[in-house]
Image 1 (cartoon, rainbow, N blue to C red):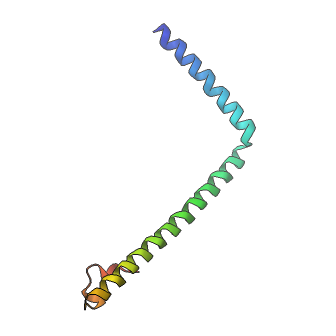
Image 2 (image 1 turned 60 degrees about the horizontal axis):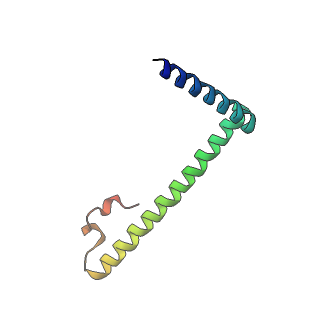
Length: 83
């Protein structure tokens, strides 16, 4: 139990020091919130770009498949899900 308490105290001290250094380094809570909002916005943009790439790949593969067969677009499984 004594070792646990010593380890706990050391962990709390290290955590408090990290918070103090991080707060001084990164600024106020508002600044941190603005950075987080910015990171989320960039992440959403990357996600949307990746989704568009995936849809382009689906369209390309479907076009190749359609060129190889004589189907109409309504015959292709999942055609109603196309954007």
